[in-house]
Image (cartoon, rainbow, N blue to C red; front, side, top):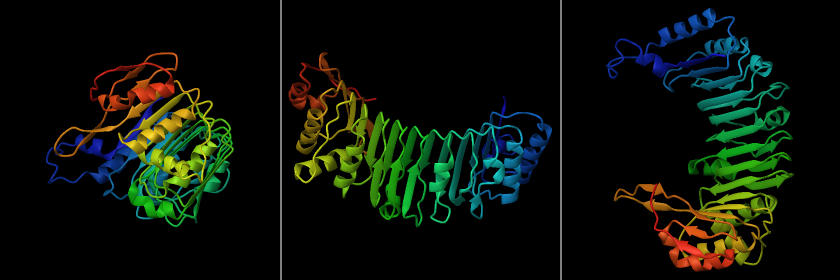
Length: 368
């Protein structure tokens, strides 16, 4: 099946005067006429994908956008991708909720409030990707997520929480959840509690500021967990709560702040580290110092069946302070030979090898 890709930047490049960018304004009206013409001429065509991408400074009337969305849903569309800015909050239209063919919905709405419906619908929706949208208590995503019974993957990327006090991800169908936010959203996350209750969840990726509180329960199927927090303050309890509830995972990724937060919590004696009996792969964003080494050794001792340890660190590559991620240090299974590909860890290789019960082989590192 074909897909329709309406991108105003690409449309502008096809215009005769597009080379004179400073003096030329994108033909907004022509772009609208083009979309209308295509949708009318392709009235009977079934669509695999409908994409509408409009630059942030090209404001469109909401009724025009809704009319185009409605036209796409009438063509049994499977995936809808919308990227634009409106002058008012966007409420998802009923035609999206009742579209029986829709499986993927991606929304990128810079600084726009998104009104998610709380009624039943989206019967076949499997992936929901929200990026740069503003969520709110008044139009909470909590009820929406729980009522999408076929939803498998949820991605919240740089979404504002506004005045929300609870972000609840409660679903029996979700198998993958990704939450990504930057440090400038620290205040919003600091005022909001996060609850995750998904018995079929296999993959959890959290790369965001620390929420006011976190409740994790019923993660009975978890296999892969990544915890990357953006600040070091108050990480101890947060990281401990997360790790405690995902101890059955087979793959775990931790950033510097997560590792040190976990270590501080356990070294004080107030919290105890759980054992990771099923953990096979451990990936650590590393720092070469005493605290990190102690934290890593502690994790290794509580991971009796670990097969692969990957250590990543940032390398300063020029005088401007640009950092580049190095290739990982990979340690093989306990019965195989350990291979270290980053020379900065060579001073601690014997300690690591002793914990893993294998002989180290030193290799000089090469950056990516």
